[in-house]
Image (tube, rainbow, N blue to C red; front, side, top):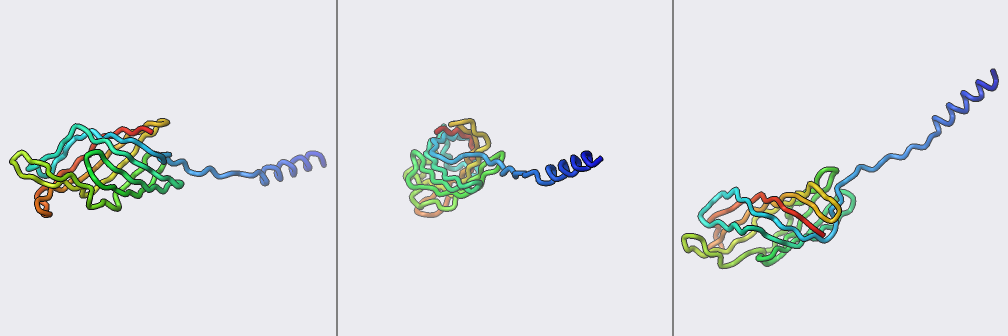
Length: 166
């Protein structure tokens, strides 16, 4: 009987002293230098002067610290840099533009009616929802403002599927 009691006490102590380790939540790992290609699919707000190139390629440098993200992007055809901040969770990484330099423009774009505008990035956001090694997919959402002599004459919104590669 003493042996059974001792065994029960030892089992109780070993179970109660068992060390448990909490598992940190998993976040999508998106840090690094990416080349992103967004295929334009317009949901145009104002069609007076559409700018629908087939695709836009840009470099995207993402710094990741746990779930916190910062990024910079520069696109072919646009001058200037866009700075983003965002977060990553287990299923997606989201970035929102926090600073769009005034140089993030394409000057001298000719509209179908002959009007010449400067196309400026108004707002920008990126969602990355799948990473597979050195490739990823997501969405590039951008609003462009068409300016004539500094005054906005029309806007365009794009939600574009994109692919990324390292």
